[in-house]
Image 1 (cartoon, rainbow, N blue to C red):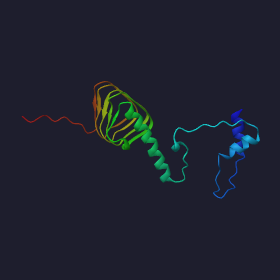
Image 2 (image 1 turned 90 degrees about the vertical axis):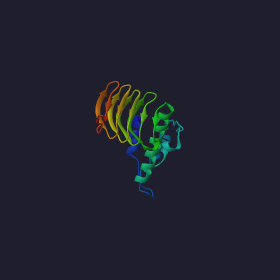
Image 3 (image 1 turned 120 degrees about the vertical axis):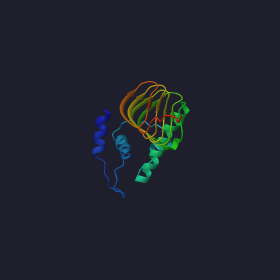
Image 4 (image 1 turned 30 degrees about the horizontal axis):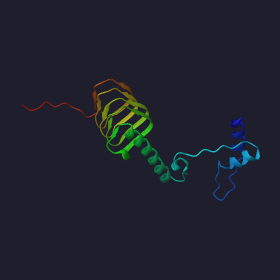
Length: 162
């Protein structure tokens, strides 16, 4: 029933205002006029209801969202070398004692046991088992990585001089 009403109300929205914009909040008046009960919910954070009218505002809201993710990771025991330089574009589930260096990007669904990531890594849909180290500047796409590995794009072993 709610979907039917919503489709009807959206179809009748008008943009005859000074800004020439459509306001979803006008649907409330339509619901009241149709005798539909209105329920309200309080957002947990003010930023959840901020308007976005420019690319600058969109970028600010994205940083707020990324900061929320970073704080949750820190509280769960993850070490972030710089929480302001983390980008999660999906979900990131981490075990305790995971260390993530700066400018790492996580896309899709990523799951980490105890692992370490160098700076500037990009991981897409990756599962990393315990004891694994991912060196800086590494890109990993759609992978399951087993325990106690070292992965790196620029890693090279050089024998010690005699």
